[in-house]
Image 1 (cartoon, rainbow, N blue to C red):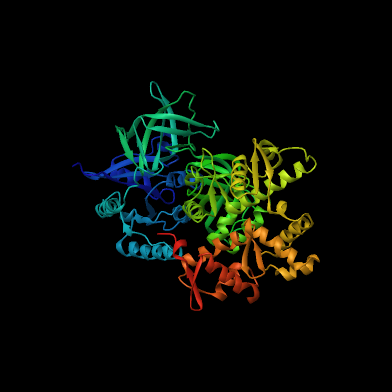
Image 2: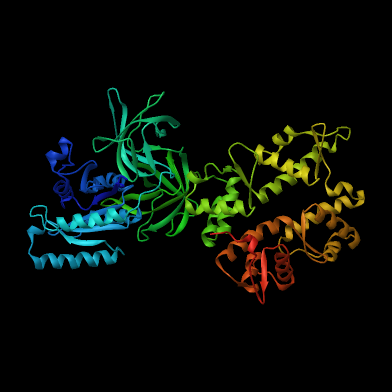
Length: 637
């Protein structure tokens, strides 16, 4: 059996002229300064690449980055996709501006394995090297960085290089590669054309697998459309390969029926990505000492856009809304860096992770985002996603590329918990249960209003409903009609629809009462009036009101909390998911802890009937003075 090849992608980082390129050359024999301008000026301008074979089946791919402040954007592109980093600090200079900024970028990109190298140690005696080590350790503590090692080295004398190789060997051995079922994703950092080979691109295969003749999707920011192709050639450091697992440095040639204009900033993947100019992001870190500009640089992969924070602005460890100046190909879960101009050039202000790569705009989105940040529970997250799904449909086929892991898992749990239902459509469309219930009510109301002035009509064509209710998609309205037919609120005869809601079977004198009862219960939300209170408010007899409420209950438009106490059904649909989410993380909760999940400031008058209803509905199980989640509602981990 052939031994599995283990490979580590390592990036350099550090201030200009601290010896990054010299170190890589010393380790690999490759001069990564390939451009004439780089060689004449003695400084890196573009990304450089080299390979180190530590031993059989154990390799390191090096990405050497520029250290000059003007090329931090290039450094960010190089750091995207690496697994470990060498932070090089010259013994004669110590910590410098780009030392700080490069470390910040590595941290924001979630690169945890950082080896700190004190370079040029041949220029200092042991005492000075030790003093510099202590100063660097203090700097790292301030930045909350725990490096894999702090190692004095010298490219001139070879000091520390063998220890460095052993550290890299240990890291390469412990890193496990992503399996082939993951999305194959490569951010293009170089592109050129070769006769007979078409367009050739290089980049870091971040995850997944590329193989010869594998179908691939090309995402060019110029084309604004996805081009399908196949991998025609695959190389690693000049050696032809039939298959490469990520993370790894890769060069590949692609051909397409349409002209392929791939360049730095584009993507190649095994699954279609999202073209977007509006993002929901999670800010993992932010320099709160800086005033954030109205326009900032958004760096992701090897691309850069100008972003405008909208609504709630940017706050550390909160969700934020970003609009990009130009559409960009992205997926959920990618890490990004934010930079802006300062008096001395440009600075990195923060970064985070893309939560929703295609954030829809909808009425009240900024208020909803503010509420989500104030109460960042899964229930609020699902509510926020559900509001957006009314503008931009969800479907099972793209939640893996559109959302990060947190949001994708939340949607999948919501589907299992019946908070979302899959519609009858080819793309696996989803819609929230409450949104579908509202659609069903709207369909019945539309049928009634359209037929009110045409008593001679035998029914309403279904396509009229689609044109009259643009708030819902056709798939959602089809689902609403299907549910209406199943629960007898709608009848179909000879292809035409008629309403046969509970109100149509009532005494005509009671029909106005029904709509007013529904309106009062909807307005009361979780604290509904009792039937006697409804009768008093409507100046109707309790018997008539009770008859109306029982009809509504029969058609599941209201739920029964206690004798003579009913609530509108959509309120229960909102409360149940919140209770389930809370009890997933808490084994037991008291009535006092559960009350705010039902409604803020709710009194015992309504809280006790609600808790008893949740027990009857098999949402909760009472255990003395506390409640736990009903076994049927628990998600298997």
